[in-house]
Image 1: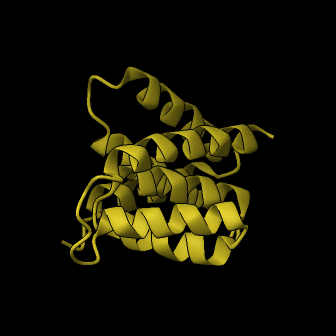
Image 2: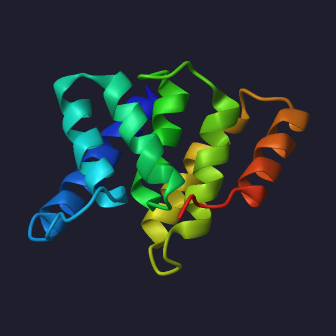
Length: 138
């Protein structure tokens, strides 16, 4: 239930983001385009496509996609449920959210805690280590 509410917040965040990006000139595939296609796929119920597009955008440094991918791993939407990967993506997103965005930071802290309760301390440490070592593709 917690993650269903979280995904509703992610959908809202993405819709606001997409409204802002609607005026951008989509020249080549970029994390914003992957996010837009992923969001559209999610709304159509094509969670496999959404997860794939969010992964592309997340790997290229898009913080909204990183957050959304964490939620999808926590819910098992389009991917196998994996709380360790969810925690890893929430940690990565936390490192990329602007300092001034305290609401987003607080929400991610809740998401991280929600994922961590399903993991052993060793799994939490490993997910955090993977997040620290992660580098964007671009």
